[in-house]
Image (tube, rainbow, N blue to C red; front, side, top):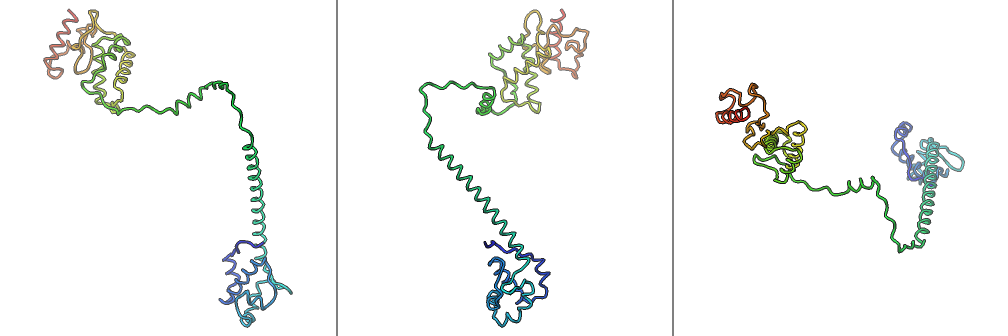
Length: 285
C-alpha cells in the first residue's frame, strides 16, 4: 500500500546534506520519492538507479558514491532508515482510517436496514372513536402563552393640559375610591403636571395610568376629605398646586393655610388671595 505523501523535514534534510551539489540534491530527492512510491525499497542496479535519478549512467557513476552514502545498500536492493520509519507510520494511520470507515459503513447499513423494516410495517388502523382529550398541564399553558402573538401597542405620549378620562372611567374611579369630583380633579392636575415634567411621563394608555395614579393617591390617604355639606366643585382646587381647599383644611391659626398667608405679591396674586379668603370665611364662619 502506497502512502499518499512523503513527509520532508526540511531542517533535518538541510543539516544532513550540506555537502551535496545541486545535481546530487536532485538525484537524492528523486531516489527518495521513487523509494517511497515503491514501498521503501529499490533494486541495487546502477542502470535502474540512474533512471530513477534522471541522469545518464556516466553521470550516475560520478555521483553514485556521495548519494548512496545516505542509503542502506544491500546486495539486491537499497533502503533508507528514516524513510522506512515514516512509511510504516503512514501505513498504520491509513489502515486505522480504513477500519474506522468500514465500521461506520456497517453502522449506516444496519440503520438503513432497520428503517427499511420500519417502513415496511403496515400503517396503524385508526379507530372511529375520538381520542380522549389530553389534559393540559401548567407547562402547556405557559408555552401557549409564550407563543401567542403579543398585542400591538401605540406610541407613548404625555398627558395634554386638557386631557381628561372618559365619563365612564371617571364614574368608576369615584365609586372605587369613594372620591369626590374635587378630589379627582386635584389628582388629575397633579398627574398632568407630573407627566409633563417627569422623564418617564410619556404613557401608552393614559386612562390606565390615571387609574394607577388614583390607586396610589388612595393608599396615601388623599381621598375622603370632602366637606360634610357635599362634594366641592372645581373651584375648590388650587390651580398652582392641585391641592383640595375644603372645610377640613388646617385651622386659621396655621400660616400654611391659604387664607392665613400674607397677601404679598411674593406669595400669590390678589385674585388667588380673594379666592383663598372666601374659602377661609366659608370654612370657619
